[in-house]
Length: 79
Image (tube, rainbow, N blue to C red; front, side, top):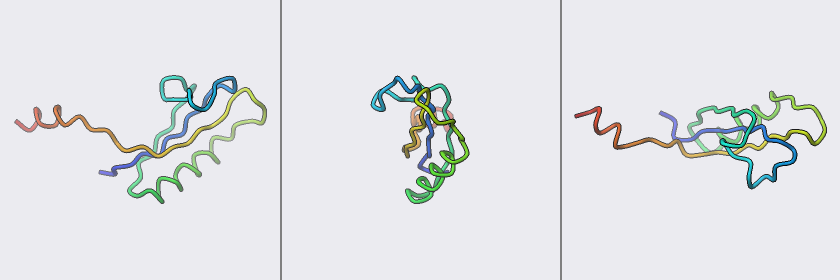
C-alpha cells in the first residue's frame, strides 16, 4: 500500500493558505503515491486537471501527506 497521498484542496479565495485544510476546502482530491517524486507529479497533474477559472474566488492548494493508519483497528481485526 502506498505510504503517501497527493492531496489537492479547492479553497475559497478569501481563506488564507494556512487555514486551507481538508475541513475548510470546498473539494478534496486524493491520489495515492509510492514516492515523494510520484506524489509531486500526481499533485501537478491534479492541479492541471482541476481547471479552476481565473480570479480570486477559489484557489488550489496541493500537498503530499503520509497515509494515516489506525494501528489499533488493524490489531483488533487481526485478533
